[in-house]
Length: 398
Ligand SMILES: *[C@@H]1O[C@H](CO)[C@@H](O)[C@H](O)[C@H]1NC(C)=O
Ligand SMILES: *[C@@H]1O[C@H](CO)[C@@H](O)[C@H](O)[C@H]1NC(C)=O
Image (cartoon, rainbow, N blue to C red; front, top):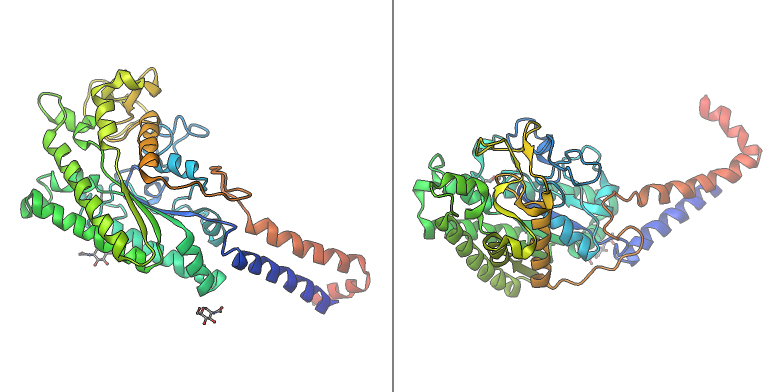
């Protein structure tokens, strides 16, 4: 009895594992996201000392149940929208307490952290945030976990088939180079800082390639000199041209660097895309895109500006879909939609066709769990009905 049960269970286990090996984890192509607050889906919420959090109303008001969910916007992030469009599941935050191997195999992981930058020193005054090197370290830990679960070879395949998103850089300017409290602002000039920043990103992308990342996209920067915070800091209320120029320069340099990497790294499809021009046009001609406001945050603390974050006592604009900016730093869901559309057009990635839950449904898919549980239940049933196996019970309890 016992041996038969063992055989049945073993067969099912083999079928399950081989099923995934044969399909090369075709069962699941997932994504791994590295980024800052524009892509954070809850990591900072779990960092007890972080000063950059989206854990208060009215963040998330247009997402799911309307409660704060860790996203620094009212609705979806650009990565949410692009991932949905590609047919990929939405990866949970790395620091989500429910994250386990099955969740990772089915949904990937998001390491993005508000305040984080390409450079370690960026965003220091938020006290706690995950910088890019830290996010890569955590990704390595994820890989070790998965290798222990499914074996080294299968793990390698799983990570080589996954999609990668790298979306940071604005904090390296807004919360580093452009702020006199950071030493980078006086150690570097525009050109030397750009070399340092893009060179560091290049090193990081090469590390990711060494870890198996083959299909990777880097999102460029938008006109960050036009975020409400930057406008309010200028006396005229206009966009800060110097800041916008830096964003453009970063985009050009990163695009060039990515083209070089894509040809020099084995099997690498590394793409760069930015939505600078479209967002710039939206900001200059909001009406053309269905917006009524492109210079102030929808969520603001009355006339007290800048309010560094959206808080429960804030006043919301009447129609959130008509504001380009949600808070002082971050675009609204409607603006993210326009940014995502532009990036999809530029990246030209084809939709990933997956069966079951690969429809971009935001809810985590418990695929391995029930699938593995059901067969063992079936194997148990006959033994319970057989009668003789009742003899097992006393021996088990003794
Ligand atoms: C950046 O931080 C990582 C850990 O997160 C560390 O391993 C690395 O040495 C740091 N790099 C520099 C240049 O300080
Ligand atoms: C893993 O792959 C290597 C090289 O392709 C092969 O020699 C080895 O037998 C594989 N290991 C397992 C456990 O399949």
